[in-house]
Amino acid sequence: MFTRRGGCRATALVAAATLGLAALGCGGAATNYYTSAVTRQEECCDRLADAAARESCRAQIRRVDGEAAANTDVNQQTFRCVDRYFECDPATGRATRDSAQAQLDCLNDLGSN
Image (cartoon, rainbow, N blue to C red; front, side):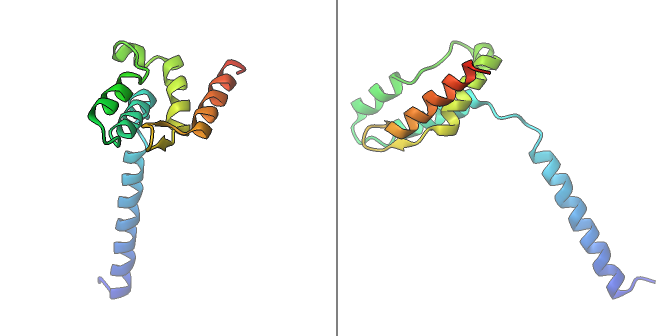
């Protein structure tokens, strides 16, 4: 016989299992730090009001040639530093001074590992 109390337990069990499966599905894909870092920098440039300044800002973003190069371990590690520490200065469309220093420190730490 299906009781009210048993029904609540079954519903809770199904909900917990569903949440568990959803969590597993969300954690499977690795972050592409190159794509994420470049996108964040582009979005920062796009905040500039002047169209010429936006284009100049975007042109100065460091990029690699091709998806294969972007996905190498060294480039993923490098752009992970950018992605992790990038903070936009909306007045310039570029990284804040503290953000740029944190990125540099992170990059320097890569060489010591």
